[in-house]
Amino acid sequence: MLRNIRINLFAVTFILICIGIVMIYSASSIYAWERYKDSLFFLKRHISFLLIGALCAYLMMVIDYRKLSSYAKPLLIIALLLLVLVLIPGIGREVSGARRWFRFKFMSFQPSELAVLAVIIYVADFISRKGSLIKSFWKGFAPPLCILGATALLVLLQPDLGTTLSLGVVVFTMLFVAGVRGSYLLGVFLSSLPFLYLLIFSVPYRRARILAFLNPWLDPKGSGFQIIQSQVALGSGGWFGVGLGHSRQKLFYLPAAHTDFIFSIIGEELGLIGTLSVIILFVVFIRQAIKIIKNTQDKFGYFLGLGLITMICFRAMVNIGVSCGLLPTKGLPLPFISYGGSSFIFDMVSVGILLNIARTGEYP
Image (cartoon, rainbow, N blue to C red; front, top):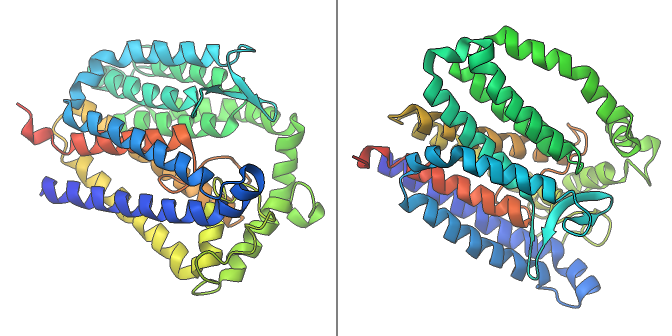
């Protein structure tokens, strides 16, 4: 049974990655030629990310995933140290006012992606060790909350509110399923709302995004431009799309067409059939992943898998929701499909770990 689940999960992931390769080239080729005089620029870089991700995923598949629990704290310390280093001018790379990347010759590395994985591993290990103490505030809830708070603070300083929110959703989901009292989670959530309000409405570009979400036509050439163009792309596709490669919105109308808004290009070129197919593939992926953790024999594997599934599911829902105008604009990529170095690689690492967890019965 688990072997069939592994095959299904691998097959769905492979299909999503193939869709991503095709759509990244379609959405980026003209922009790449205009900027770099090489229509294959983004495709070639994405293929290099794919090879790196495949290697990392393979390594995650061949080792016993339970060994990750012994590296939970060292990995978390390394991730937090990298989050500090990326904020230092001259070390971290700044783009459009955000300092989130380490820049190397052939690729950029976003330490917040490693931090997300490190926190998930740490919380899964913590839950598996604490047992019934997880219901205690000071012994079971406070430690992972402090780790979440420290990580969130460093990520917010970049600034990156989207990753912070997604990490909070993942950790709270893991703690809730583990048996942490709902009153603790609700109390922290309610107490964080004033800070979230300040983070959004005290920063001009975030406030503009919320106002654009409520009514993009108030500023159609400014803050509402992306949402409007995204909806135009989806609406233009109809049932069957205008044809692969024939998108008009990718002709410098829709910003980030190959990254944050690739779902809109799928809708324009492949129509409602194409977008529904992608959504169905994600539903199948999540169902197969849930079957894996339901058959997991150890607590660490269960909560590790739960955290990874929640992260992928949340990012997919937010990306699709933003593209459809159901959520405010937020820079979270569509897993396995959007162009992106670190996020794409860590999505593949997550799949490697899930496939490894599915082999739990084969370990002594």
